[in-house]
Length: 214
Ligand SMILES: [Zn+2]
Image (cartoon, rainbow, N blue to C red; front, side, top):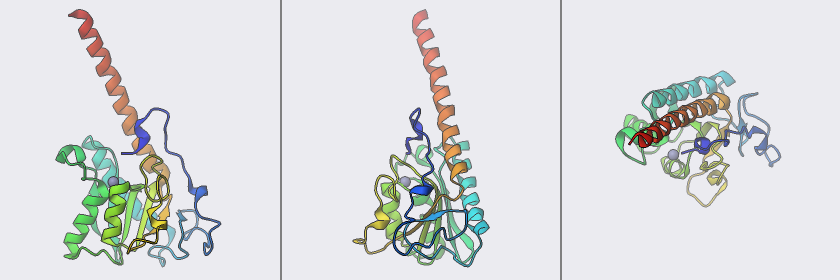
C-alpha cells in the first residue's frame, strides 16, 4: 500500500507535474478539478466538474468504510451511463487476500453487474493512484477512463512509480485524470496511518513495561 505508512512521507499533490506541456493537452478537462495526463477529452465529458467530484465522493465513502473496518482506506466506484455499476474498498485484511484492493473489488463487481468482463464506456474513480496489480487489472478490464484522487509516490503506476498509461505497447490504453478531491483522499490515509502509529507506540510501551515487570 501507499507509503503514507512511513513517518514523514506524506501525500504530495503533483497536479502541477501533469502533462500540461504535452502536445494535444488543452488544460484540465474540467476547470479546477483534475489534470489530464495525455488526452484532450475528458471522462463523461458532457458533465460538469461537480460530476467528477460526485463520483469521487462515492469512492471516498468506500474508503471511509475501509477505514471503519481497519483496512487501509482506499475506495473505488465504476461509473457507466451516469450510474455506479460497481463499488469496492480495500479488504485485504478481512479476506486475508493480498489482491483484494478497492479497484479489483470494484471492477469485479462491475463486470458481474454487466455480465461482461469488458468495462468499455466506463470510468473508474479511485481515491488513490492505482498500484501495479490494479493498473494491470484496469488495463485488462478496459474502462475508458481512470480518475484518481491522490498520488501514491511509492506504488502508483499511473504516473508516480511507473506510467503504464503512457506505454502504448499494451492492447488497451487507459485515459487518466488525477487530482479530483485529492486532499480528502490523502488526508484519509494520513489519518489512518497516524492512528495506527499511535496505537503501535502505545502497544510497544505496554510491552516494554510488561518486560520490565517480568
Ligand atoms: Zn492496488
